[in-house]
Length: 225
Length: 225
DNA sequence: GCGACTACTTGACCTCGGTCAAACAACTAT
DNA sequence: ATAGTTGTTTGACCGAGGTCAAGTAGTCGC
Image (cartoon, rainbow over all chains, first blue to last red; front, side, top):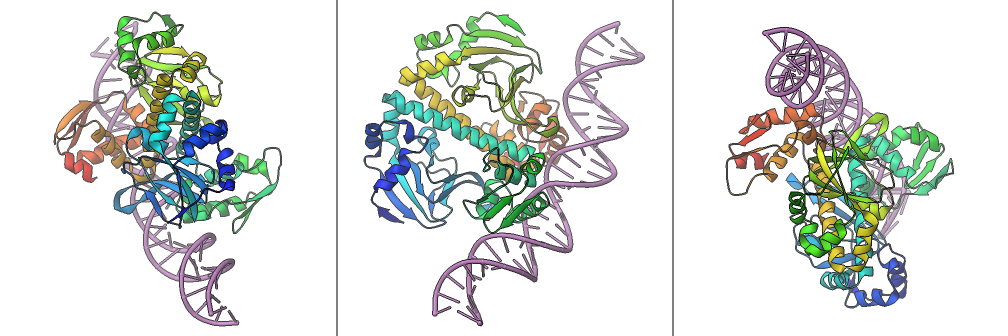
């Protein structure tokens, strides 16, 4: 872990994030005052389930995995945050972290003073509003995961993930996975082997996979799955 | 469905709910103005996934099941709300309902004007604060469900549910299920048959089940599970 | 080029839990 | 009581996916 300075390109990322994007510059600057920036290696732990943390985190670059611990060291991902996402606002209001967080690849993380943010939310309705919308969005994300776990088989979940990256309208297209298959497996609640098998099932429906490159030949076929 | 009048005992329930409990009487009264009260039979649908609703719901009595729809009419519960809980605040900010809701037993439901509540939240920081904490709590609930689904087997999930109703300290105790086993199965993401089998597995660890009455002889045995 | 990692895939096996069918139990209405 | 309805349990079966163990790519260093 190394401490860094906030650059202007970092600010650009903040400016177009869901949370900060809604707020006027002055407010953003005020919230950012005293924030610290740090770089982390893959597998660096940011905080642990049960910790009482009073910071809020923001992914400037890289990827963070949020997970719960089970018996015998088992881990279950409850969310994965790419560049531009904020997390651990929960802990700020609930008192302790409900999950652990670690960098899923080399990442740069911004750490805001939670008490200050809370203060702002209590005074500035605009900040409160932004927080509310952020929380609604986060709630929907976990609800999505839960519902997919309960309703879909492994290949269906993968198909659904692929489709969520597909601009609707086009029947064939391709894209690069934004992270390792390992991480995708975790996010979808699958063992890596199961993800692999799911991909090879989908191959029969016109999906080709070369490394991180995914190619779709027939959108309808995927939707039918 | 029948329209009703808000009684004083209904107000008492509101007053000690997580959301309204934090707010001053005057604010509560203002939010409640224009709210409508209705009674519903089991299986009455309150709204459907995808509906654009501009009401927020509150369970005065009974039980509401929130669920997502899958292929071929499959349903997956994403939350179950007992008396005193508020729901569908999500839809207010996201535009449409992310899930369907129906009464899981005969229930009395209070329906608040969402636009007005939103208005209040935008003006009164106290309301915003209450909303934020409510959303954090809801987020944690779904996260709990997701993590349990991914980390625990059926008997473990049931054990965990039982333990969550056990006053910590006592080694043996008993309580009544607050709803049908059917509903519990749904909440835990199990088929009713699987719940039944889970109970009979736990019987070997000192759990006895007679109808809705659950009796625990050995707390530690459950925790070890 | 070579070896040494690490990511990913494949195969074999087995357990958990879903599904269908049937038996049972509790409740209601007649 | 009798029959019907609904909630719950049990048995038999099977398929999805976890786990362990090899094997195959890639990728990095040199």
